[in-house]
Length: 374
Ligand SMILES: Nc1ncnc2c1ncn2[C@@H]1O[C@H](COP(=O)(O)OP(=O)(O)OP(=O)(O)O)[C@@H](O)[C@H]1O
Ligand SMILES: [Mg+2]
Image (tube, rainbow, N blue to C red; front, side, top):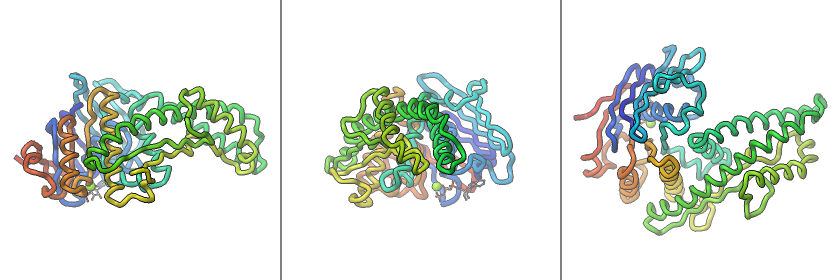
């Protein structure tokens, strides 16, 4: 996977910019607030059709402009794709892939793949279950059409079901349509459970070895899926078994649900446990250990995407590089540069060793302009 060319037009603080990246390491150097993260976000948006930060899509349009455009050319399996995205302030986004309009986001699943490391990754370790569910949804949606589709249907079923339960509690609706929403919730919920379980199992296997390498064999990292169900280990293996488990949880909690007016079990209550040396990282790991966990998770994701797609994703590192100690930086660079095209933002070059600098393409980012340093 390699990005050949990128063009931005009225995107964030860029009026117009062009970039021809190197196939290996690209360093984006600039002072604060010049547009480094924005540039990474443009690459992320081309792959995920979602802003990198949790904002409205319209925030991607340059202030005062009425439309933004991104175009890119990338190579995948020896084939070149051209993609263009237009986002107007009013009206719908359009995506054109190889001159063909694309109507659904799912048409881009399996195309450009990107993994982004940011300082906010720490919330994976320190944050709430909702932060970890957001991570699962974001990653699985990039990997699977079926997941993306099932997630949208699950959310809709959950919302309708909760409206119904609340309406009943307030005495304004009957429960006539409850069986229908139960069926939808169970069908799509089982798909999410099953996919998340598989994803976490694969990620766990990879995280153990990446974490071991990052810490030079001194620490172990384990991930454990905690589904939003009253089930004990071993967890169900098949989608059908997840469906039965959810159905029986709904039956068991029926009276409690009617009393509380909300759905008590399902993937919307999922979490996963991150442990270092057998202890919950959220509570017991040091700051540096938590940071390393977050990094291991992302690195494992790179390896997982690589194994699923049979090509490594493009890697974006935003403000994480300079936080690492020299040994961890070296491991990270070795891991990434041997196989991926990488974009690293920084405010100075002191974190890089000579060999990395020699091989890297250096771009200076200043007030919404980007220029390659010769
Ligand atoms: N839609 C927009 N239109 C114009 N400017 C914007 C828009 N959105 C964000 N900006 C501005 O773009 C500037 C650059 O933001 P960016 O996050 O890319 O900075 P950065 O170079 O990564 O800085 P730092 O080193 O502090 O992380 C900021 O000053 C921000 O306010
Ligand atoms: Mg930034």
